[in-house]
Image 1 (cartoon, rainbow, N blue to C red):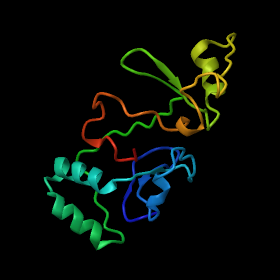
Image 2 (image 1 turned 60 degrees about the vertical axis):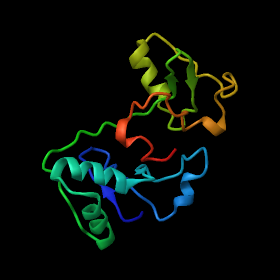
Image 3 (image 1 turned 90 degrees about the vertical axis):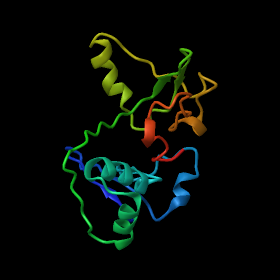
Image 4 (image 1 turned 30 degrees about the vertical axis):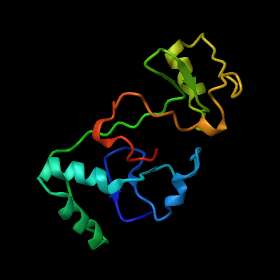
Length: 156
């Protein structure tokens, strides 16, 4: 872990953090970790959150990060965090792209979504030429800037 950690309430004790190993963002498939969310640009998220919540400028945030160990800041106005996991996405043209189900959740979720009597066959990795090990974890960036100012904070 690096210098910045974002804690938020959740029953899984998951949090977002930076890393002292920026080389971990280079591989296309990045399914290595300890179940927390590794961020490529945590200082930018801190700048956005603290500007909106406390009116801090970027220099004040940078100074806090440079200060180092145990400089906790609580937000006065909590921001909801919703973490999702998708094995399929649809682009603006309606094209579906599938990704490897690295956590094996589709087989658990499908009966709930499709009904108990339904069965689900996950697509083979080679069934969709757009879906391969290189794109299994990371979908291509959307054509529209739907994520606004936080897009790219978790790696490209």
